[in-house]
Length: 362
Image (cartoon, rainbow, N blue to C red; front, side):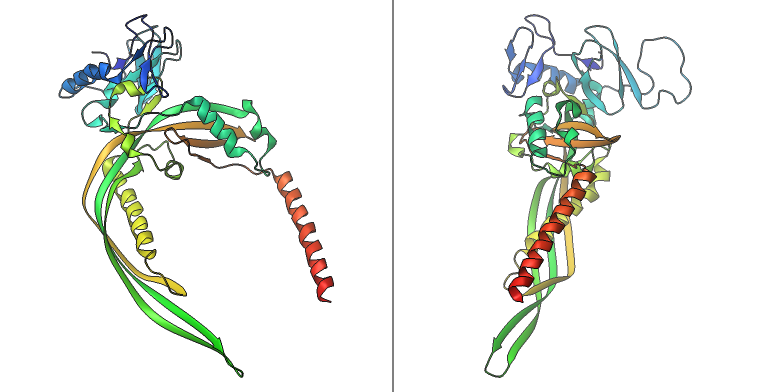
C-alpha cells in the first residue's frame, strides 16, 4: 500500500478536505459533503496495518540516479497520486499539499503504530479568521512600523496540526513561607509601628489532566504555550481525514524528553495555587517548596495552530493563532524613529507637569 493518502470525492473524483466551519469533509469542486464517520473504515485499515513491519529507512523514490552519501538524510520523496509529481518532505511531515497540483496529501506512515495520535482537536477557524486576528493583533500599536500594517507584508499563512504530549499526574505540594503583619498607630506624642513575624505552611494535593507540552522542535515552546488554553472537551479520536487540507507534523520530541517540561508546568501551577491561599499578611516570601508527582501517564495529540510569517528589515517574525479559540500571539518590532519621537513627547509632557507643580508649590 502507498504511504501517501488522498481523500477523493466519489461524486466527481476531486480531492476533498476537512471544512472547519462545517466540521465535515467537503469537496471544493462539486460541494458534496461527507460525515467523518464515513471515513472511519480507512483508519481501521491503518490500524490493521500497524502490526506490519515497514522498512521506512532510506530514500523513498522511484526516480533514477545516485545521491551522494548523507545527501538524502532526513528527507522522503513521495509520488502524488493525482498528478504524478514528486513531493519532497522531511522526516516529521505528516500532511501537506502537492506543489504541482495543490491537492492535499497525507503521509500515512507517519501515523502508524506508536506514531498514531490518540486525539485530535479539529480546526474551528479558517485562514480568513487567522488573517483578521493578525490585523486585530497589530491594530492600535503606535510603535509598530507602518509596513507591518500592509497586507502584502504577510509572507505566509498556514494551518498546522502541531504534535503535543498531554500529561496527567497527581501532585503534592508542601510550601513554607516567611510572612509579616505590620500595624501602625499614633498618639499625641509618637507614631508606632508593630511588625509581627510568622512561619506559614501550606500543603495540598492536586490532580492535573492533559497538561500540554509541544512535541515539535520547529515550534518554540513559549509561542505554543502563549496561545493556550485549548478546549479538550472538543477533542475527538484521531482520524487522518481531519488532516486533509492542512499541514501536519509527527513529533520529533519524545514523551520521555517532554516529561521534565510537563513537571515544570505542574510545579509552577501548584505553587501558584498554594500561594493564593496565603492571605491577610503584609508581606509573604516563600522559603521552601517541595512539589512531588506520582501516577503520571501521557497521550499523544494534534492541536490546530495557524502560523503566520512576516519579515521586516531582513528579520523574520512568527505569529501563532489558536485554530480553535482564535487567540493570537507573536512578537512585534518597534520602529526606532517613532519610539524616539514618543520618548521626546513624553519628556515634554513630564517637563511641563513638573513646571506646573513647581509653580503651585512655590
